[in-house]
Image 1 (cartoon, rainbow over the protein chains, first blue to last red):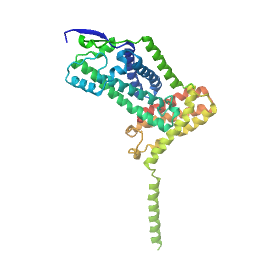
Image 2 (cartoon, one colour; image 1 turned 45 degrees about the vertical axis):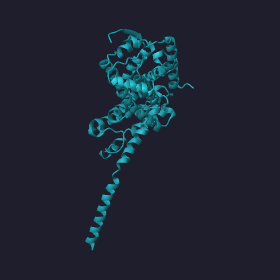
Image 3 (cartoon, rainbow over the protein chains, first blue to last red; image 1 turned 45 degrees about the horizontal axis):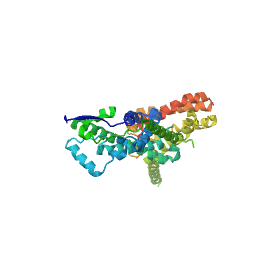
Image 4 (tube, chains in turn purple, red; image 1 turned 120 degrees about the horizontal axis):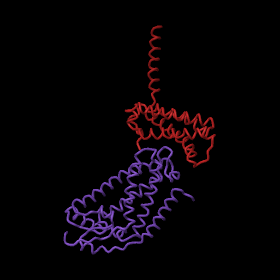
Amino acid sequence: MEAREAHVKVWDVPVRLFHWLLVLLFAFMFFSGKAGSEWIAWHMRAGYAVLALVLFRVMWGFAGSTHARFSSFLSGPATCLGFAKKLFARSPAPYAGHNPLGGWMVLVLLLGLLLQTSTGLFANDDLLNEGPLAALVSKATSDRITSVHVWNFNLLLLLVGLHISAVLYHAGFMKENLIGAMFTGVKHMPADAAGSAATRFASPWLALALLCVAALAVYLIVQRPF
Amino acid sequence: MRTKLLVAATAIAALGGVSLEALAQTKPDVLVKQRQAAMTLQGKYLGPIGAMMKGARPYDADVVALNATFLENLARMPWDGFDASTKGEKSKAKPEVFSDAAKFKAAAEQLEAATAKLGAEARAKNEAGVRASFGAVAKACGGCHDNFREK
């Protein structure tokens, strides 16, 4: 490991901002979802922000920088299995972007959040609050969707726990500082592994434009001006 | 002869009394339906007032007076449905309803008091008073759900 280390920039600003904003919002959603009926209005507002962020991230997964793209981090079963073996053997397997298992975790987390936010749109609290699309369905349907919203959150908690455990495993057993990289965007890795890390960074203006598109989409869903 | 008749009559009356008492015992699932129905109606009549308070719907003093009066009465209806016999029934009522009965009763009384105040203001066609007392009703609903109703 001491041989030659390269400092490689892998995460662009949009990915990093997305990640940490999502962490803050997730914590707030957790709190405001459990804190009681007086927090529901803020829970809903923050939920719109989460939905916009997730929609943005999906678009960035197609149009963003190299390591933000789904095509770059979703790999086949053989690659995943090979990586899992290395992982449990604690032998170094540094990846510039997401590793094969981490890549799938990104997708699963995004899908989980998409399910969570979209069910929230149809949910109700049996008081005066309901999601902006709850009016489109019957009360019974809204009640069922609310149950999914409640149960899927437990699933999300489990996934987040798994995600954090994996990152800590990398820090503890594989000497990879993934958390620091998500702050700075820079990974410290062996020079030979870094060689394959040619990264094309997409324009932050494109990110801003896509975020605006996502925000507009959420605005239209919530306000339903048509 | 007369004694025999009296015994028979007493026996019939006693039997009748027993069966009447059994009939008077409302079934637990009906009690659950009762309180859920009362809550559904509360939501039905609270909703339009809530929409008016949020400005999602224009204020209509007549609708508010009617709905608030219904609410005031409905607020007293669910509670005898939370009978101990319903503990095993499927519902969203938390066990605390029965284990912390004093607190539950206080929460129920809070709703009754808040809706009585809202009803009085609504019938007086006092919009400012309605707005001032609405918050306490919403708070009574939410506070009780937070503590005594499963999500």
